[in-house]
Length: 441
Image 1: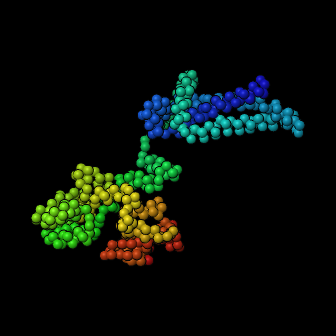
Image 2: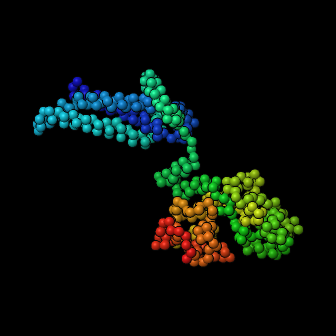
Image 3: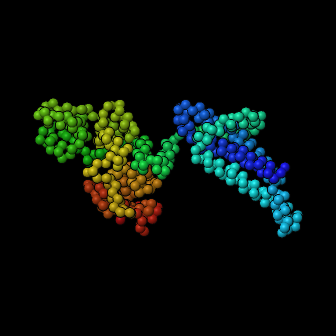
């Protein structure tokens, strides 16, 4: 065989090896969701690729037969074609016996390098760029190869299946998709610029609804604006002006004896129509939806849907009112700062590069996200920043108390009737070394 014929054969072997490498990586990297979309659009090749992904044994067996056979044949052809020429070159400087050995090594290195670049690295990088389209284009030729090599495929498949059974390994590929998978895809999309950072955060917030309790977003007991059933119209008007909300719990005696709620739209309508603003004179009182404080936000949404309401009273295990929540509260949690109004003060305000001023009732998940903290100690014992400080200090915090953890110092700035109003969070400093235990100032 002449040198030209040998080089042409090597080029053909490289092309064949590149074909099998491309077929292998494109099938492995093809995203099932994207393939399903293409199949739904009528592309039958996408359906074939998904079927092969479910049972990829025959496909990869053919790939490995092709790659290994071509690699061996390429080494034989390359050694026979290049070694004589390298030997002639090396004989100029060294003895013929040594020149022959050096020539064999040089031809081996050249063949390996060429196959590595053109038959492995290049096709695999190419296959990663658009795996679904390439997998669909190659599925037909690969099915033909599977048919031609069926006897060999059967032999090797039975041997491999026996080994899998012996080791107790699964025989089929699992394609279950978790929320973590979806979040990882959205984060990758945000990093690639496909999704805006705020859009990605909205998606993450939706998945958090299953883990966040109602107590993390409700209006707490001490902030509830409630009305007494027997209040005269002047008192009702004054309270509404002082605390304008969409709905007000109506109680008898104290806040723990809720009779229902009144809708601000009903009150507004009666005021405009000149009707009296009193419950004993026709002001409608709606039955209140009462929910436990251990529900998740997803469960709250389901309660709202079933009851046809958008306002609920939150009670604890002792049937004491601990807060109220509206549909708008839940949706604001999902939308984040996308729906924050101009006059609404954010719960987390960044003062400079290394300090934040945080409301004590801020959900601890929001604090972790703002500070980029992966985890906090005793995370299952609290839901807000105030709860974190109480757990770490093992008492009700006082003004100037501080806790250090994970490179941050949390200092209580303001306390109102045992309620933590403001916390200063500072990054760095000797007292904020990672893992520093809690300490009172």
